[in-house]
Length: 489
Ligand code: ADP
Image (cartoon, rainbow, N blue to C red; front, side):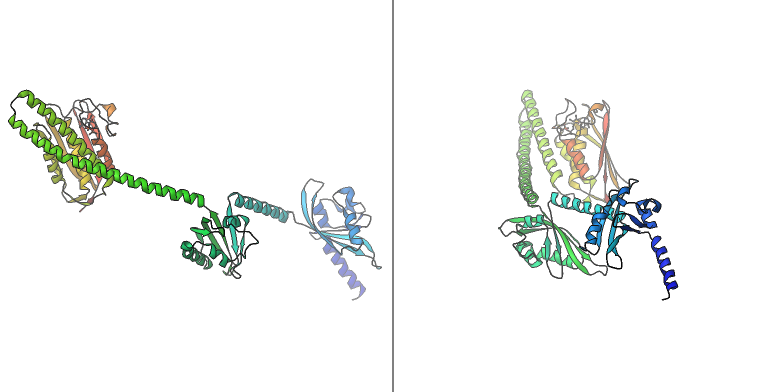
């Protein structure tokens, strides 16, 4: 190539180097700067004029170029590459990727050092952040006692972290940690399920929270909660499987003992229920026989005092019978499933009227009915009877001495069965209205019952997803309104 042409190309090359974004610096063996390009001006934030002919260490003590030059000069290394962190004179901290190479004269003596530096501050910051995150992740893994594994599906080799080795009770040197070895640790009864789950992962699905037992080499059985996920390359090929195992033996044994205790409690509860239900049931038949005998006796006695005693006996028996009936109702409401058969309200009311007549001690009950259903309805006959019997019985029980009147209305509105039970009785004081549905609550001294009836009514209504409300005026009477959602037949 002719000399002029060569000269033009070197000029242009020099221009190019001068304008590069990377910093290019040439320093002689005294540490004095021979060349400082525009990239160096930007990266070090020092103009070329301030640097040419100056010793770099004067500008920034961080420049330890002589030491490096020594190593390069002695031929120890042919070039040096290093990540260099430095604080610029404007206070900004930067990271550089520096490549230092010696420059030679025609006799092959080192005469200067050339340094090419690239600003890698952003990359370095990300690297540091990633390292920190990695450390945090490992800390979290250790603190949470997470056993972590990673499997290469080609070789079947598995890498285990220390926590996992600890859980499985094996040492890193002891065994060849591959998939086949892991399968020998899975408890025989859980083997099928655990292997099927792994098969899913190999086929590309994630598996969460599967529970299986392992039998450790020392014979100890542990409960494991495991999750695993396949990792695919950009072409969708499986390249590894990663997973987490948590030892939850302690939680599991608590769970097991809790569910055993729960089952025991349930059984005791059921036995108690059965005992109370059957006992109360059995008590009722001797009571009605006694009531029959009392009535027979009444015909043979004409002594007023004795008759008065007989009345007292009869009242006590009726009250006892009512309490026992309420206990049976309570258990029927808590235990029996919600019925959904055809319901005949008129029939229920008729039976209630008859039952209540038997316990009215000769007083006349007047039930004024307005039953307007228009169509067949389906519902729960047991609970509807419990609700109506208690409300109508109260209406008569808490009437004024002279007349026992109860107005009963039954309609269907917007798929809701509505009962209104209104009496003209003694009424309930306003401040007592919020209490009358409580268990064993009696709102007045006049009350002779057990205080269970309205409690059972409220719970039966709630079981049927209905609502009950009461309005009352002392001395004038009370109105109970019940609404229960129903299906028309
Ligand atoms: P009890 O067995 O005492 O009748 P309930 O739970 O049926 O128990 O009723 C609770 C209390 O509410 C009663 O003791 C009574 O004071 C009051 N009560 C209930 N219904 C009426 C009513 N229709 N009129 C007046 N008071 C009533």
